[in-house]
Image (cartoon, rainbow, N blue to C red; front, top):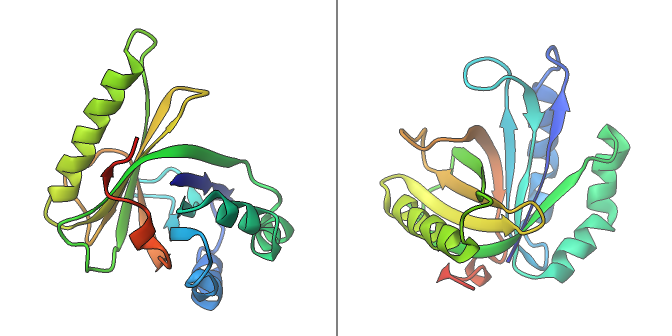
Amino acid sequence: MHAMQYEITLPADYDMGIIRERVAARGHLLDGFPGLGLKAYLVRERGGTSPVNQYAPLYLWSAPEGMNTFLWGPGFQGIVDDFGRPEVQHWTGLSFQEGAASAALPRTAVRRRERIADTAAPAVAVEAALEESRRLAAAPGAVATALAVDPRHWELLHFTLWEDEPSGDAGDRYEVLHLSSPERDRLGRGKQW
């Protein structure tokens, strides 16, 4: 599994209805994309819990070939044409777990990035993060949770989809506009490394 996200931060007065219409019109195009485990079409709007207007889809790829096909194909070129070329962040997958509410459509997503301390043993930090992922997956309302790592920057990515607004899950909160999940069943279960 590979996790990937790009963030398109928009002006404070940007009409986020444009992004909502874009996802409503185009979101279904990846519902059968080969190699895509899932794509959460995420937005956050300035005010409340967000300091910015942002479109920030997050992808979990079941195969790197799917990620490559997307990045070098017309789908990503549409983003580049409309918004400029964003920085694409990516992480190596450690685990994916279906949640207690796995059959529900997610409405909220929480992403938390956590730096692994220089003094921490990487395997110990990852094991603790895997335990947290298991705890989050078992929480009422959790649809799914993923854990990934960027070993270049020694950063963990915790990503959880929720049926409704969660309480107590720290991190950046997003509204889920659409979920494409053609190969969700190929993302693996639990500890993968």
